[in-house]
Image 1 (tube, rainbow, N blue to C red):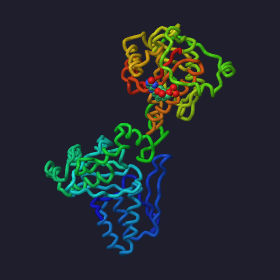
Image 2 (image 1 turned 90 degrees about the horizontal axis):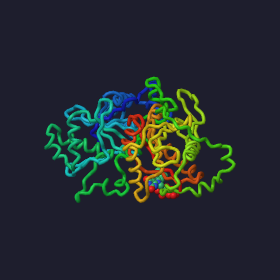
Image 3 (image 1 turned 120 degrees about the horizontal axis):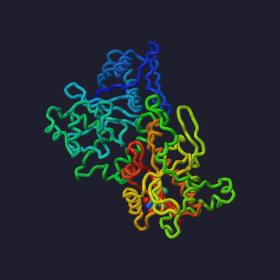
Image 4 (image 1 turned 30 degrees about the vertical axis):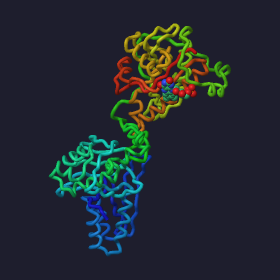
Length: 476
Ligand SMILES: Cc1cc2nc3c(=O)[nH]c(=O)nc-3n(C[C@H](O)[C@H](O)[C@H](O)COP(=O)(O)O)c2cc1C
């Protein structure tokens, strides 16, 4: 069997000697979603115990481990070693290290469980190229190679491994790499190729020049950033903490549930009588069935301040602010993951009866519009860009921009924070569609918006609060 790598337990895996013939191998608990995993080995032979200890310290090749078991125990213990080694590897407990001149050159560290990890042996007569999904980044003072296709991370321990990865942006065989980096032996290069090949970071180039990743019709349609976002915001392909873990509790002040008013230039908005609306509204099924996207508006008879007031009150006002554990949360008409209500509403007003055109922030607690600016060039550009997205139609009467105060979510969630924001945008969009239908207004969600231009116009810090969704509103 081909396995020239140094095998070692990854950081956090512990070997606990419970008694002279019982040992426990245990992974740490990452969070509530990823509990510890325990393997009970009983009886454990002295040779196998020594092999486990070696895996937990400096590591050894499969060959060295079998020799150790053979020397200390009998031949009959070997299947046990191989059984558990395979189990540990598939559970994502084991790192594979490639050595160059006896020193570690690169280490493949599992990020989660594998379906079935198998070393794919590279050959010297073939060319290989890096997957377009593979990328390098700095992680805890180390340079790592990762890919959303992979269940592992390759730590590039020395300069030569980083140089080799750079070379693999183009198809290369072992000899070509050796000619460029002669300090590495062809065997070492081949071993590193095999490791990269085994976890989908490297691809074989076929004789006719084709690469599997590029002929696969499913994969070819994925953009790099989308697949990375998908793989890191869902569980399964990584073992990062997930969900409400409060990574910044006690380190950074939480943001208040309600954003402080952005100006003293205030318009008090009309409040509808919700109890009366419950009596007089169209039936729910009629609203649901009649809802449709409307992109042409009746500018001769534009939306009014009263309609804006009713629309915002019915979709986005604050009903209540509460303390819950370390959080300050609120209650509004639409649901929101974690009740953080990170979405702020901004209005770029083009034409509205009794509200001057310009740019406003909606204060959902006091149900007011706070003016940020008149109709500046930036406001015009925000409206114009929506018109461009919507080219066959015309400039909306009112553009509602949803901006996220990111820290409202980032402060308490890990792995899923941005995905949660986008889900919340979807929920608010549908609530707005339904309320607009109930009010006989025309409305439409918009697929894209300029977050840089928004931050400039709203005078926010792009990284703290910027646009994540858009909705247009007007009279039919
Ligand atoms: C998230 C989202 C983004 C949308 N973006 C746009 C857009 O940028 N331009 C547009 O004309 N329509 C946009 N729409 C409207 C869809 O085209 C519309 O919902 C779809 O054609 C179904 O039609 P209906 O809403 O009338 O049922 C969007 C809808 C959603 C839900």
